[in-house]
Length: 261
Image (cartoon, rainbow, N blue to C red; front, side):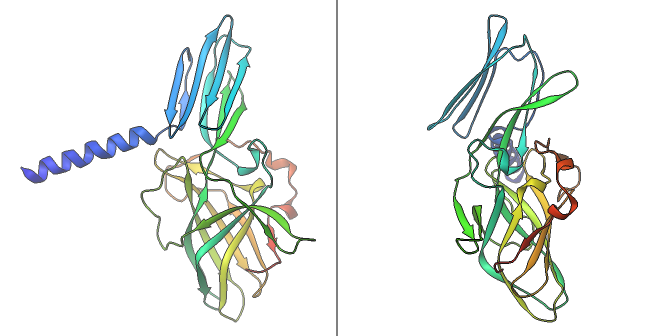
């Protein structure tokens, strides 16, 4: 009996946590009024005459927009990093908390965390467009390479996992499954990975935001990174893309790390 009561209690707690976290999804019309409050972010849509008023408020920012429509749908999902307001760089550098040594001519998978950016889309009958974008993750930047030729990157420090980590807040951090491919005859130490966020392929469900990527090690100082178009678990939904992949040439889809690993 005690075990049954305990299991029910744990289930109720998990459902409560899930209820507190979930924000992603499609909010159908009519939206008047729509109010969502999660993690200190307040989203609201209210009718104002023959239009709708969209408001997003947080502790340090307030955004207000007028929607010239009587009604619409709203889609909220994670998006590619470069679409945030005042985004400094399209590149993402993930520094490992502990360095990783990769065996010669071997392939291994590791799991890293990455900062999540959130998009709010306005949805019509046949199309959608980005209405707003924000993040709950801390914004930090760093320079990859020397001051003259290096690139500014959005910076994130991540633990290194050998399996999918649990207990992450999907509104703040996602999980990247990174395949490390060592093409050399030497043991190679990896301390960081750099990605071009133009090619991010984000997948999500209620409890997890994810991406998959490859890092091909060419020598002790150079590697190529690219994203893979699938989630890390079955049944994950592909997030709406803001950036138009057709505008990127094939040669740009990989980022070459030439300033050290």
